[in-house]
Length: 175
Image 1 (tube, rainbow, N blue to C red):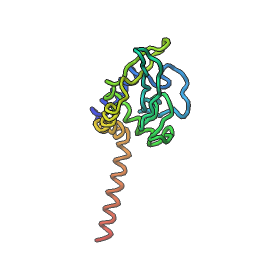
Image 2: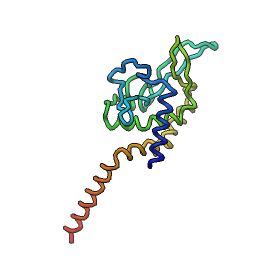
Image 3: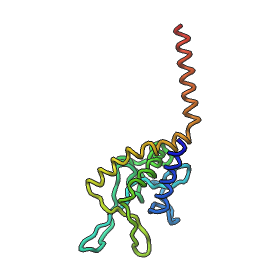
Image 4: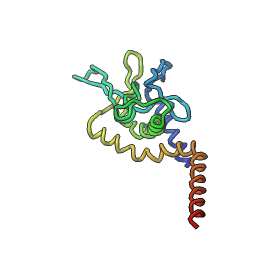
């Protein structure tokens, strides 16, 4: 458990250090973009990076991409288009998945310089890439679960203990 948890946190740290996210450069983060992050770091890495639009070999636009899980990297925190409240179970779940998933998907990110500012963009936003990104949620699952379980192991053990006690009481009553 500890190894998987450490791996997930290292993946999240890699994403935080190497890619852009709201507030990375000290700018204020709007309330609807905020996330509790993982272990209270308050960093929203969930959501998709924008895609670059190139015509005739030149960058002509940056288009926001709204991912089903997380919304836009720099925008509102969403799950399937519905707003996610900072600190909610949904927010925490997305935050735990984001580090490992984004690390596994990092082959599709690149940092570009626009007017002296670094922006992380998708290299490709095609259908096959989106399917691959969705499929990467599967190997991210145990990595996302590990720090959650490790941070909540006492509560999980307490719940299991109470369930066992209630089961024993029911069996004793039936006898």
